[in-house]
Image 1 (cartoon, one colour):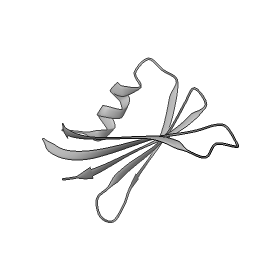
Image 2 (tube, one colour):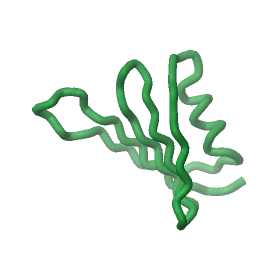
Image 3 (cartoon, one colour):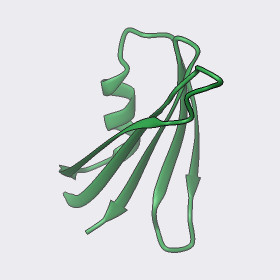
Image 4 (cartoon, helix red, strand yellow):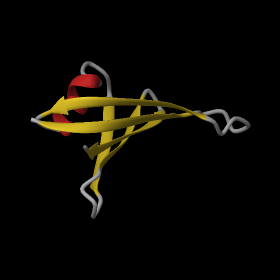
Length: 75
């Protein structure tokens, strides 16, 4: 298992409010993509996965017409 810092951002849909909810936690995971599938299990969800040069794994997620982003950085 690897240890990751997860930054989960939920973007606000209101055009006048550009703030977003941001949550940070540390997790031990085998597979961040499996974590995403389980987190949104039972919901209609789509996502794009991007791996940055530094190894950070980013999932841009859309569920219930709300845009979210989960960034996993190995600790």
